[in-house]
Amino acid sequence: MSPPYWPRAKRALRQADPVLAGLIARHPRGALVSRGDPFTTLARAIVGQQISVAAANAVWQRLVGACPDFSPRAVLRRRAPTLRACGLSDRKVEYLRDLALHFDREHIDAALLQSMSDDDVVERLTEVRGIGRWTAEMFLIFNLLRPDVLPVDDLGLLKAISLHYMDGEPIERLASRDGRARIALLAQKWAPWRSVATWYLWRSLEKLPVANRQESA
Image 1: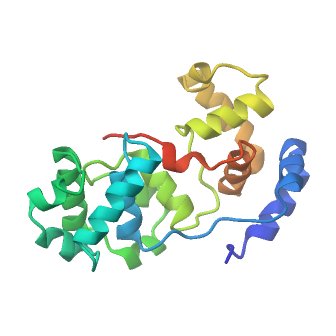
Image 2: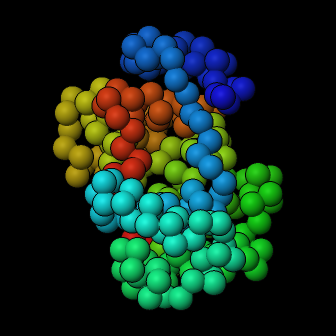
Image 3: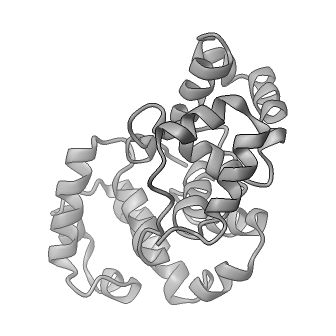
């Protein structure tokens, strides 16, 4: 089920930006859908860092097989060699266990995240080893369904902006401090629906690039 704000956001973006109006017309169906519970969402993000989507899926299936009742407590009950045998590196085992500890000790409260501001969610999540700002922003968009997140570190978003707004300007320049400032200025007209604008820009590339993102922290 799409977020209740989606139709209103589409109307506002069509009026504010002719480029987005065209992209929305090309993709009349589909919307953000929340991706599972918070712990599972973040655990999958850690598993998928710096490996291909196919490899990440294979590791995840082995991990779920080793922890069929997948939960923070279940992960903490598994010994490190068991987790490594699923295909996780030593560092990812450390990250996954740190994430599980944060949830088990309620340093991260799934219910409380819903009521926190975007900035506070990012601050809380990036306390976990292996979770950087990009992962926290993807969590805001795809788990909490927050409507106004602009992930300026996302390669897919940069590619789409280069293609549709910047005459193919090199991604490296858009990723610079000056480039990010220009993107923030461009995106002012999308507020308070910058997550929705980002989603349609991703769709313009015919795939959602989230699963392919590589991040370490």
